[in-house]
Structure formats: structure tokens, C-alpha cells
Image (cartoon, rainbow, N blue to C red; front, side, top):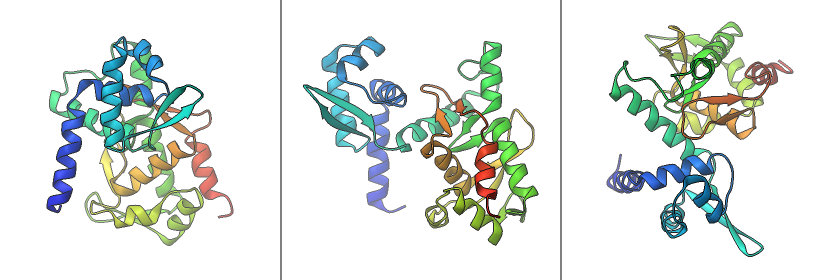
Length: 235
């Protein structure tokens, strides 16, 4: 990482050190909103909301558009919410296994986080494991050395058809595709740059949605089966 990159990451970390900024990103993860909307939902004063929205806007995390006499704010893409999901995974790991994730005190919460959740920036839980199983069964991924996975030619064609951004994931400096241990299913799900690209595709296509303030991923009916079926179409 170059010095300018390190400075940019440090600046972003300082911004996310503001609890209000984190709460705003969570709130906007549920959709665009005005300052008055956010003040009501977060029980904060409007000047405080406006000040922190300005910080987020200057950092390129949120964008603003005029709607009549109001200004409406929204996240710029999926990256801000994904960044918080990654930090929540890290925080949960640091806290240790005895600390339950949000919502896990209720049985419904347990089911939700087991069904589909983020593991850093990729999909985990039953949904994540089932996707990796399907990719292996279809021959789209082959086992490599250790935890490494290899994307086959057929896999590249299929995932490209499904809208997964392979060029961007291949340019990443991180591991491209790995079998990531899943703590609820005790079997691996797809991690690495490819895993992140798959989750991004699900979010961008409206097949999945990050639940604000949690690691839970809410899947649309029929997902992720419909996703891999779209990749299989024509194959």
C-alpha cells in the first residue's frame, strides 16, 4: 500500500470513528432520506445530522440531490455499507466467541444470521455455503492448494453471465478465491475477491439487501438459487 493509500485509509478510519457517521451509514443503508427523516429515526438534533452528513459527503461516502425544497441523501453505492459489515465481522472476532451477534438473543435472530450474513465482504451462512457447493458441483470452481480455489473457464463464463465483475476482482491484491470457514455451518463458503464480487452482484441486482446495523443479509424470495440459475442459463 502506498503512502497516499495509507493516508486515505487512515482518514476514512477517523471518519468512521464518529458513532454518528456509523449510524448515518446504517440508516441510509435502508434507503435515501432527508435530514429531518434521519433526525427523527436516530433521535438526534438536525444540526448534528447535517454536520456529519457534510463530513460523509466530503469523503465521497454519501451523495445529495434536491427534491423540491428538500435535500435527499443516499449512500454512494454498496461500498459504505459493505465497509461497515466488514468492520462488524472484525469487531465480532475481536470480542470473542462468547459475545453473540446482534439479534442472536432471539430465535428469529439466530435463524436469520445463520441463513445469510456477511463475513467481512462476502456471503456466509447457509446461503454462502450452498453457493460454494453449487459452484463446485457445476465445475465453475476447482479445489487448489490449501484453501485456494481456481475459477474454471466455464465458471468465468457463467459468473460473467450472472453479472459478477470478474475483471475488478482479478485486479485485487488479495486472494482471488478461497474456501472460508463458516462458523455456523462448519463447512466453507466462498471468500476472497471473487466472494466479494458475488455478494456485490447480489446486492446490485436487488437479490439481497444488507440489514442496517447488523451482519444479516436479507435475501429476496428464491435466492440464492435464482442467482446461480441465471448463471447456468445458456450453459
